[in-house]
Image (cartoon, rainbow, N blue to C red; front, top):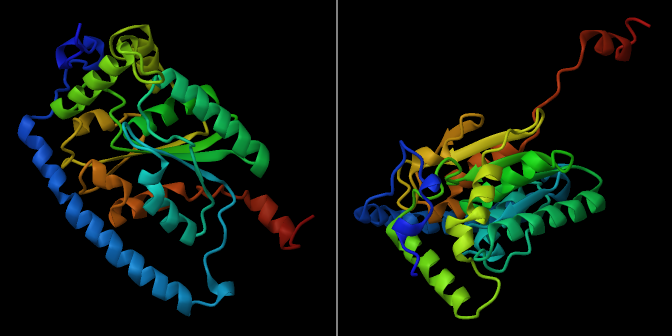
Length: 282
């Protein structure tokens, strides 16, 4: 059996969501402009850093940031975002994913191990930034391991309807399944798109998030790869951008939105504590 869009499990495209039209992928052409904007900004930022005294540069943000690539992509796809965030004071880490083409449950387990490693090394919870499928993995792990995750930021991640994707993506899934059937290991199987694995992965991506785990969902109505409505999780703080799906990985406007979402929310200090600190009461 050849896996096509029709053989992907129906539950992955709930009622109310739909596959983007064939022509929708043309919107991804804006990736050229997005890459150009990043190049211009990166060039300007290098000059600004050279002129800025070291002591005046952004202070380090204490919580580490783990970047998780999307379907078919690897860590290098988020390299531009990583460099920009580092220049802004964030300490970023790779997910150690060369190509996100395997079983999603296995990828989630690998991501959890990576989080444990970073948490042990840095002594603090981690904030996760996930692009597309990477965001779905991040959401599932955050729900399961709130002891490791301070917050997540998803970019174009169709958590509500993973099956609502463009036909070109369906053909890529089809190819991976056929290659796996032919003997190539560590690739998606039929179970990953239409069986128990698909169901469990979908359930994990929609699991309730424990209190205290911050969640920002970045989406674009110009997304030509997935149904943008599937990216707006009702429990998340939704942030709309104007970007292609692929371009979210390096569009300066998206990186700015990610940076803002990663800043820890200040915890209000009780007035009585402030008074004691000021020496006005004891």
